[in-house]
Image 1 (spheres, rainbow, N blue to C red):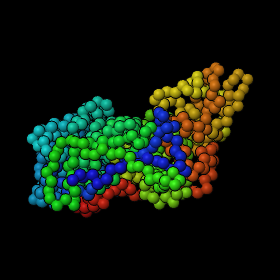
Image 2 (spheres, one colour; image 1 turned 180 degrees about the vertical axis):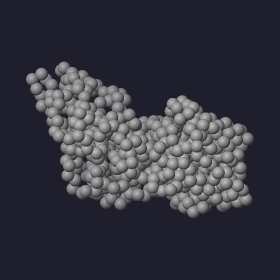
Image 3 (cartoon, rainbow, N blue to C red; image 1 turned 120 degrees about the horizontal axis):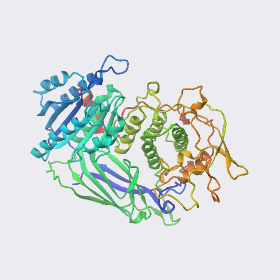
Length: 606
């Protein structure tokens, strides 16, 4: 009996809400979703080894916020809760713990947790004292060596490596790419950034490796909630080493922001209801083959089932046929996938926000785009009675949080964690934003700068409308998106050039400054002779037509396209204005399953 409860493919076919899908052949393409739902599973009986690599450097002794508790204190308490939780599980759980600074000490050496030995194990962690520098490369290498030996001795055991750090390398290898090459892709590596001092860029590189993942402890009081995520995944598994192969279409890879024909997933756990986004020119011919290893046993299974740890073809999924009214030849119940298109849009925005190489001007225009998208999304929610829908509310929270943090010292951490939460459908949500504690990467610009007039020209305009870069993407910083000035008015002069009236209405920061020289420069560009382009600087609605992967900006509100016109400062509903929107403080996401919530609560109470 398959552990997959349901798998189906649906395509958007609502004639009243028409999206513009912008990728190759978008005019004839269809947007769809692949839904895979896993049955509720029993707690696994597979022996499971958790390898913890714990940062014990000097910064772990720093106090958290206004409390008298250090980061190390919270990690010690979290480890104690986990050991207590492990001790009464029927699943054989083996623990190995390394503590590192510039050296690596083995605190716990492959010990099976029982009620009789947890006190001695907890005591070893309690004796940790933070000091020394941070050698991340050495810590990864030592964990790899230990896990390689363990895997050789125990080939059928589950293994999860959880690496926690609160800082960045101060000794040994410093380069992110070189550190990423050290990561072993043969087992799960979860990289946890503790607090706001860790190097999010490095942890991002490490987590991009196969079977890698990034988690962020934005509030040390919630450390147990963050650690409960991987614990639940290994105690209540469903499928692992999943491979989705798409015929006659493509599937979205949130990690790379690309549409691919093959997507790999590390696992799908008990009760998860996962949606993947599809695009095809031939909806009736598309099919998805699901490969993987069934490591879970259905909760309603009467007998224990032997686990076969070999990958195999589990299902071939084809689209659900439309129900047609034979009298009118119309679809009886059309599929409206607008919610998933908004998710697609949000994931692409999150991917761009993870970049940390933007300048002040780029941030300004990116934030204008966020405001426009947010207004569109809220308008759709209001018109479709979805203001309280948890799924849509989480998308609003995502956009609000990246709007508030982009360009700040901690912005990448929030963008990465929110991106992972959406892509992996994780249980924990980061939302502990304190803008006052964040530094700007760049000089802020005025909240209300004066009207400026500059002579500017067009960046890299193609000779014809058909000339288009194959890899063009709204969020590709090699393209000239951020040079396209929204809200500019063009007037030609005698020389065939033009002047632009630009009104910059809002700032990326809340701070004013007095020095006008700090205002971000408008780039000087030249207009190609004999250019056929009529609007070298399009407004926001034109920009949406240029993007290759931003799919949703015209799924608008039962045909109302006025929202795509020039933005105004006034919003009919204040909560639809991104400047005044307050994200919810929920620490659990809309994707949290009942069994995951049970694990979180149980660990928190230990």
